[in-house]
Structure formats: C-alpha cells, structure tokens
Amino acid sequence: MHSKIKSLLLGLFTLMNLGVLGLGSYWVYMSTMGYENPSITETSLRSVASLPEHLSEGPMVYTMDKFIVNLSGQPKRTIRIQVNLDMISAESFESIMDTENRARARDSIVRLLNDKTFDELETIQGKLFLKDKIVQEVNRVLKVGLVKDVYFTDFVMN
Image (cartoon, rainbow, N blue to C red):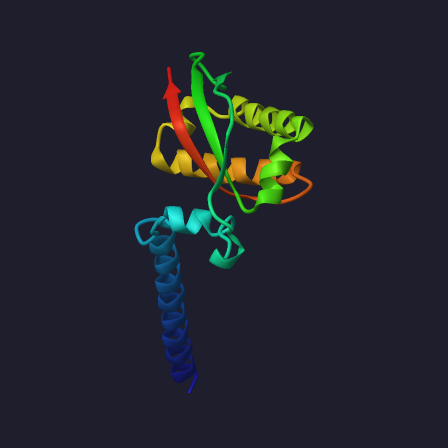
C-alpha cells in the first residue's frame, strides 16, 4: 500500500512539473519570439483628431510661418518646418488668427520640436506622432474651436 501511494504521488508531481514547465515555456515564447509589434497606421493615430464630416464647413487651413528649431540630442541638428493647421470651423480659424493664440500655439510647437531628436523624426511614424502631438498641443491652446489635422508643406532636417 505504501509503495502505491509513493508511485501515485510521484506520478502526480511529475505531471505537475511538466505542466509548470509547459506554462513557463509558453510565457517565454509569447514574451520573446511570439511577440508581435502593434502595427501603427495613420488612421489609428489620427482617430483621436478625427471628427465627423458633418461638423466640417469646408477647408479652413491656417498656414503658420516657417519654423527653424534646434532639435535635441547629439550631434546638434536643426529642423525647418512649415505647419498648416486644418481647422474644424470658421470660429476656430478666427481663434487661431488671434495674435495671443497664434503666439502660444507657435511657442508650444517650438517647445515640442526642441524635445524631439533627429532619430525620432526621421521615420514616417515619427512624423505621424509629431502631427498628433501638434494637434493636441494647439487644441490645448485654443479657447474656441479645434484643429482637425496638421499638414507639413516644408519639412527639412539637417
């Protein structure tokens, strides 16, 4: 009887060890080789700034003056960029035309660019992230209206 219990416990512990080994192997596989990077698309990045079409009264694009800004990191690099803001309405277009709002929006974009490195902005994904951050920053500045999208008409880094 004693040997039957011993062999039963040995079998049970063997099965339990194999189960734990299998679970651990699965976790290691999923965290290394089985991991898939999430795909980033312009549509998914723009979903935060996307607005229903019925809210749009037509193209209201405000073109800001060109920026020449120092980027972060070593070696020292600069960016020349021209930003066009696609506004949601005539009220938001008038809001960005206000001197105070325009200056605050420009300042927030300059600070945003100062924090970026060349490596962050050289890829398409980096530019899409930058567009999204500019939309967020300018919308934070505006008291009336919203920025729907951002377009770059000049984007040179050196």
